[in-house]
Image (cartoon, rainbow, N blue to C red; front, top):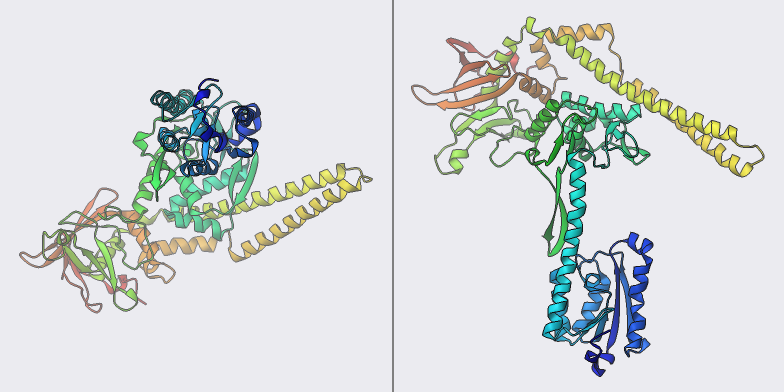
Length: 580
């Protein structure tokens, strides 16, 4: 060892710290020789003149990364002792043991130079106050810092090479498993109950269109949702985050996607924090279509993303339509301002919030006008639109009502199938426990008692599940009778009665409106007379021009007059959803 002349009496009078660190717990277990070498530097300190009572071996950071100071209690204690001038020398195998960050390393060198602390490794003794030693130590710290970068680049290069071929293995999402132990190709989970649970998420979202509806459907029908950890399958409750993860994951389209998330380190309250950010679809580095079996098509996936974006929290520019909610303003999310082009908002007031006003003040907030673009009572605008809708939906155009019946039956059949699969699994587990008990030698009571208890527990689970299923069927009938089908068809042909029915909620009415109408443009006109020019854009691409008179908050007792083309119509009071 060179540089022994740098060790002075004042250094030997202070403490010698032996700093040992391994980056991961796995290294501590499998690379014991490195740990032994680091702790063995205590013998080197004794040989250099430090008494045993002045030698401290710091092992607090075994299993901790040296990339950051946070979380390394041993390093922080060492730096604190150095700052107070109690350390004569710090022993470490190399600079990378003390720090993998150039900033932390140079900060340590600065403290060591001010407190006359030596840095010692297996080959040399360094004095940070010496210019040449400081240069060498600085280079060692820089190399230790960039060593991680080089290692990461080599590993990342190999990983991306496999990913671009679709051969990099990652943990599959619920509903998929790897084809074999070596291949990265995915196949459907062999468990039928798992497959049905995944498919039911997409089926329900097609009908309800919101995460709340999907989660509520699973909860109301007591349907479990799977999570697979290796070969272990666990069942739990579906929540919003899990439903969102399924609907936004392109893996269910049969696509192999890699690089959808990007990690970044940020400062949060003065502390480093790792954050994972989702990249937009056009920035995904690797997308391989039709790489494995699909639950849904790519087009349905894109439609789901668009729907979720529209259902999200309303932005400041009101560009999003928002989900159909329980408020009684039926045209919420459908109205566009003919003056500024923004979405028209809804304001509720009056007793219990029963008075709704459609309101747009975008130009007024930007100081471009002194009055709002649109301010009209909800009833004045809704009744003409609803009247047109009910007039358009004639008996001939409602022949798809039978499809509604089929859809209801399909939904109920899916729920019943989930229950049957769950019961089948419970009965299989009970039979398996019975076979295990039968295979045990009767004389081996130590094992037989355990197997018998397990068998009894499985039988109790089957009995409990049978009772829950019977109670569920009594609470909710899963089959539609012929009379039920006829009632649905008759009600569909009498849409005004269905619209006014007490069982029809405002959210149901909004969903019906959104299913037929894409957007409604509204523009107040003052000349030659005060009127409201409205254009209804249907999903078919057709446009209906409606001229509504009068403009204002209106009176609930006064019928609304409007014009479609050259025909002036008085809105029929029976179309009001609040009619008795």
